[in-house]
Amino acid sequence: MGARGSGLHRAWYVAGATFLAVLATAAAVGAPSVLLAPLGREFGWDAATVSSALAIRLAVFGLASPVSGLLVDAWGVRRTACCGLALTATGLAASLAMTQAWHLVLCWGVLAGAGSGLVSLALGTAVAARWFVTRRGLVIGLFGAAATAGQMLTLPALAAVAEAQGWRGCILASCGLLALATAAMSCLVPEGPGDVGSLPYGARGIHPASSPPTAGNDRGTVAGIARSGLFWALLGSFAVCGASTSGLVQTHLVPLCADVGVGPLQAASLLAGMGALTFVGSAASGWLSDRFDAGLLLFWFYGLRGLSLLCLPFSDLSFVGLSVFAAVYGLDWIATVPPTASLVVARFGRERAARVLGWVFAGHQLGAAAAAYGAGLTRSGMGSYLPAFLAAGAFCLFAAAAILPLSSARRPSVQEPAAAALAAGERSGRHRRSTTRV
Image (tube, rainbow, N blue to C red; front, side, top):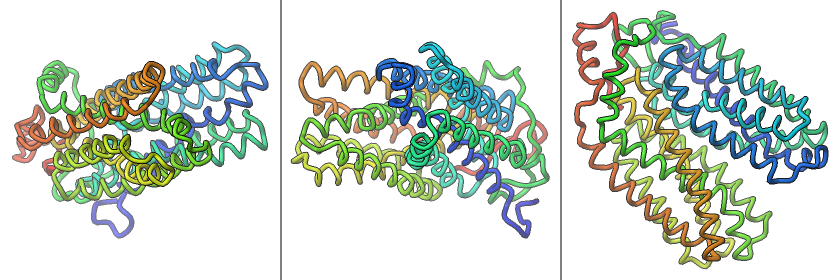
């Protein structure tokens, strides 16, 4: 179906299938968190044993993200996604027969972690870059919301299944969702619009069919990316993003609440409220990324996040005050994803977006791991989490200041010459480049 077909544009079917794939892997990653008690009762494992597998899963997830970008370039979106979904399902299904703690680490930590890492932000950005010219930021925002808030939305249902059918029933339900996502990706996702005689959503003119990138120019491309100041600014700022969200707030907000006398149910409700608001914030950020300069948006998002973290220790730390903080933070949680991805697509080109985003997302996970560990050290050594919140706020302000001048300079990127050549019709048969700057 072409871009001007009578029905819904093919790009939206592709986006829907990708959304389901990201949601399914997010649910699979989050499912073990509701199985700590059942596993402890059956196998006699303590929380530390199970948590070690979950920690390894997060580390492997981060390391697999750059691999996802490489595989998208080499294999294509559909094969990479199906491989990641199958690997995740294999890890979960194999855990049904586990009897030893190292089985848990292998199945949940290594296999499920690697599989879910392949279906990450890098893959979603590649889909959005290939299939959308307009509404690209909105689509990336929805993928980001599926990856984060998707866990919180599916956990109640998975917890109910675990309560009624045991932990194995929960695993089987997760595998069923992964199988559904695999079928959707296989049936609904071509490699590119040109492969089905279509155009990207919002595009005008000829869009060539997709073809695998050649290996001959990889060395120059990687060297060019590594020389880009914007790449390192995005890598560093996204490390700050991970440190200030999943590393600090998601991991340590509940213990912080306990320190100031807020009960566990109220603390959990704060996190649940954040999860709901991430959908709103992510979609709004995507909408804004389609209309305003992405670097300017990142400046404001990191700046507001930093100010909220710096102000928190000086508030009364009551449930009401923490609720206000949670509302602001929930709206800002995933807001940095669409403009970051938009900058990558605009400055490095559609073909290299997945690879660059893979490394940037790895920085996010490393920042999260460092903050999770560092905040724990602060609590143990200084008796309070508040210095860690102040430090995270300062890092957010630094990220805001660092990203703005580099993103606004609009220096030629390593992909812009190829994009210009395609626009002039000089290399239309070799490259798929988007000439629209997000």
